[in-house]
Image (cartoon, rainbow, N blue to C red; front, side, top):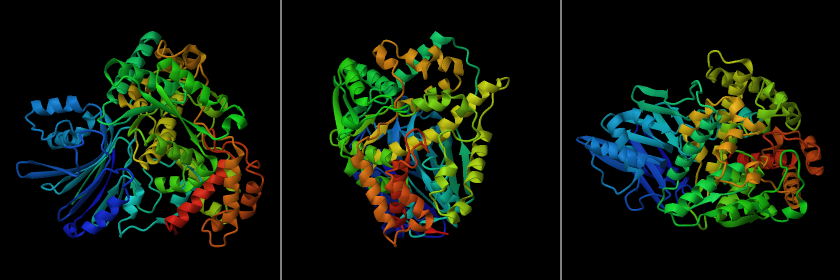
Length: 615
């Protein structure tokens, strides 16, 4: 897993711009701590930072190969899980490989053989760029579900791209400018950015399942994959068996690595499923015992209070599953004050304000895991794909005419300045984005109203909410050089589950009922039946005290760039109440008053450190 960046310019001699390229590459050093490389020609500058996972000797980048007089150069971030099959097919077509098992070379050869259509053959997580010197063209592509990030900016005669926004912002032609729409993405949408939106002026995100070809005629954007409706013909038992078959295959594929692989294990259904399959594979033909990791917070056992969203602590459940599967388990305990301080590192990793302590705790957790492992498997995305969140099962939530995870918009806006609220027009903005999202939903002819509404809800979750969590997982893990793989995002599994009717998905009158059925025999019954508990948060008041103190210090600083954007009286009252004045979730299931205050800290860090210009 790596970081990629570069640009193309038809009017400049980029062979003389090595220093600028080095600056852009340097911003991605945490994504790729093991090696760095650049490639320059008259009109293209290609950069790379490498995290060594597969083929340490042969996988260096940027990688260049020739076919006759044609020269192709690739910079690639990701992993292909069908490398062997593709290589065999390419060898049968006469391709000659120079490396032992590099998926980078396989990907480059695939592009050389099939051109842009190669993306339709890939199984994996990826963002890559291929420059064809002969054709004078740049090809960009991103994986189907958006596990790996890719941003770009087209301006004048140039196109600039990068794995993260910071790489693009390092280019001297790009300023950290944000307009009203960018601010609306931050303050109205919250962490759930609109797909394709780069927040900074003129910056775009290449959407999942899309590719772009840039040449002297301009940029041509194409969607190569989308969710497609098909009648589901399998009965309950056959459906459960097929889900198990697909999930088993994708987990086993994602264990391929030349460096140590571990698993995140909370004791919930999703992480336990991934761990169970991985543990069996380890015992059958791998190194024997898989290491697993869970997160907890200092003092949490004394302060934990169950509620509707988090009915039980993960600690006992992670231990239960580890004992059952025979894993070597590690509990990473996070210091609460350090987590509040890490809000800054999390913001810098994300280049934007994010999910507050949910970000900073994951950053610290991944930092500790990285000390012993380079690759981890995670249960991310099962709730979006199978329907695990409370809003899938709430008649009230299904009836909302907005995103069910973006709540209390008017209440939240009272913490911002009237001028900002007037500029953002929050209700109009969110209505527009919601309407755009619904217009994308593929419809199935003859489908009833209730089933059609569930299809809408799944589409919103897969293309919006899931993207938020995938972005978070990528930025926080790659900020410490840890590659996290997400088997539930295998496109074959997603395509199949997408068309399973709701009555089968929720069989046995349980959330993710079909997944629970598919896992029968792999996990203990009590784990299979455990109610969903989201990513754990701290209940220790030390964290809240640290956050409130930090917010009050920002309010006391007349030079804070946050002050013109907020209602200082309302924010001060919230901080002095310890967040109690805003005690219902405003995003997802977790972000209440304390998290909102932490979010404002992230906004202050973002505005200061990036020297954001609002215009």
